[in-house]
Length: 289
Ligand code: BEZ
Ligand code: FE
Image 1: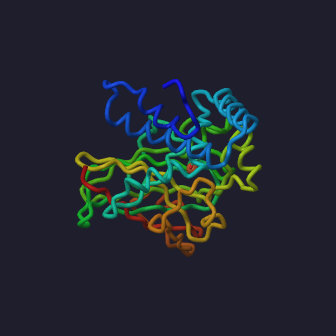
Image 2 (image 1 turned 120 degrees about the vertical axis):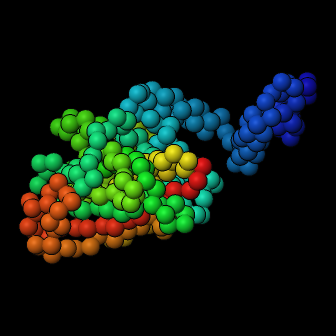
Image 3 (image 1 turned 45 degrees about the vertical axis):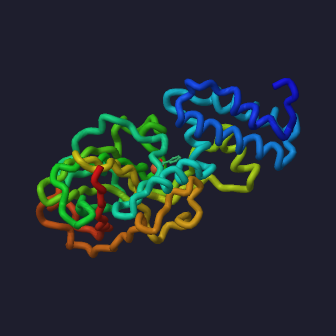
């Protein structure tokens, strides 16, 4: 086409794709370009504005490395990561939620009733529940990859003072599907805001806070893996998570348990906790693959 105009350029783009273009690529890329072109037409995008956009993309690339994933963060704060989760949600299972950049693989085994808290002296949190299928049957042998912030609001990968796998554990449930561990209450924290995504948040008058949460990846043969997180109902950021991760069914309640009521058996800390503690019961439902 030698007479490209602002009105026909989208069709011209589509016509340049060869017959060997895989169908799904044609649909996805074609639609993305159509929306990009429509967006530029709709806002009458200027050269200066698009140059700023390019500078943003370059800055995001520059700050990214094996540990810092600025484009994932961008997708998170734009709500795209959550939207993709929601598009593929199965109403029969526990909702999924953002993975975030702080998951590390290879977490050490956490025995049933094991302790993630180690020598941290904050109040004990006892977390337990059942991994089950949509009919309520326990899923024997499911694994839970669990991670959370330390009381200082940092994940181990962000904090040189923590061991690599501090507040990370991998637990396998038995025939009753029950998981159980002790930890400390995770705290609210800010997503990394010292890079170009932080600039966008500030420019839009947005804060970088996430409500506190426990992360889980739950897997079992024959079921869809579940990447999720659970949030306490009393967190001040529950209704304004900067990465849009909260779902109604992921909200849980910490019970205040009185001194002297910690289970006498079944936990690594049994016999060692006399004080009041927090308890949360939260079941996780996997859907068949
Ligand atoms: C997280 O929950 O660890 C997280 C998720 C998205 C962006 C940053 C952190
Ligand atoms: Fe997190």
